[in-house]
Image: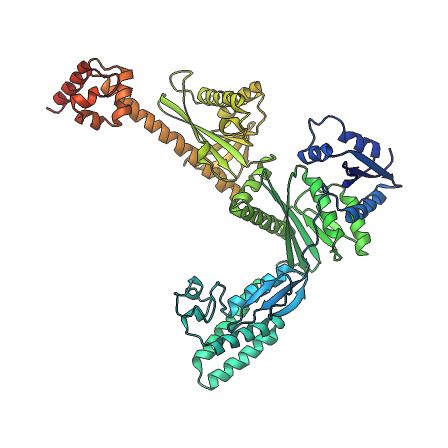
Length: 595
């Protein structure tokens, strides 16, 4: 039962994974036991393992240090590797009659001027963005002087964020002077010195009665203050600290790291990960990998959840820094807000990568945390609709990644009984839905896909009616009811006799409210459609020789009762199943009705 490090190797004897263990024999044996409960990533790795080696150590901490050293040396495929691949970044000023200020990842021999290097792409992007907005420099792809006067100015001109050299209203000399002012600002990093120089220039312009120039400088100074105010202190803490947070979908995970110094955000990095199932282990590996290739280690690291081997990691980081390092997962206060901000940024980056909005993913994460479930990427919701037990129907809607997924919506007519019984109706619908699942699960689509969460429109009665059905069918999916207040608005989520208040969780509340409104709308619209159709069928069955089946055939062909009324005998007889006698009776019935 010795601690140590193990190395997994493929057929080419390449090291594909390095891990540590408190008890080497137990850990290594676990990889080659049953794969039933094995994580996806681990299963993939084990399928490529041809050999393994191990190194015994005197302590678990020594094993951690050795693990870090071996990961840095071999960069194994299946370890989380947050590489320090930022390199050097520059602020680039193009060599052209109308110079552009841009960010660049490397210097090239193109005649441009490069300011830097900077080790943070975040710093470069922020600086360039600030300079472009303050000095109203063009951000479009137009080429000057070639495109001057050829097109209308873009939106940035109309919102006062571009001087629009494309219009010809600013001379080349004025433009070049503005670019030089922007460079002076960048070189002085937006300091008071740059503002004071602009103030002096504004006063001179005013004294020389150059009021337009003075007004432009005044606006520029105001823009500098607006931009720099946004870049001021984010946190009251004077401690150097980093924040780690994770956002997930079923296919992808984004890890966001925000770095603070003296309360100011000084850097931001994000990393995309796949096959993430064990969040505490992922956080642990991510923190180790991040600081393996970075010299700066802060006094405090804020995280958004549990970290595996937290004490060992703190010990390793403390040794690397030479001073005490603590890992904290705050629940309230300013630090909790910083973690929320970091998670929101992770959600936004993840959303951009999959073409979604960050707020949709944030609302899902808030709902997951509130309900204590693992995932809510694919949510099914159900509602019953009828008129005093007549035309009893149900609607099933799907929200995928926080948005309606109308392709998967389904409608049900209640068939098991007549009359009004919402509980029995809900039980019937869920039984039919998951019967289809077992028939179609090989497809992984539509009914063949298991939801991550089921939300029923109603309280404990609906939940208690459905729960035995799911248990009997072996369906293990989180099940909750959505409870409304007296004004028919979402109030809470019901589970096992307990209500979970959601009003204080704004994003989750909005998502659940949207789901409840949508499933109600969908069920009611189907009920109205069926009720109308049944009413029309009833009217037609009053006609001699026209039964229910022929009424349905007529409605299917003519769509509306008015069209049937206006149809000729020949048009009616052209419908399969309608003979001359039927047509005669229909025309006769509606002719008497109109007299």
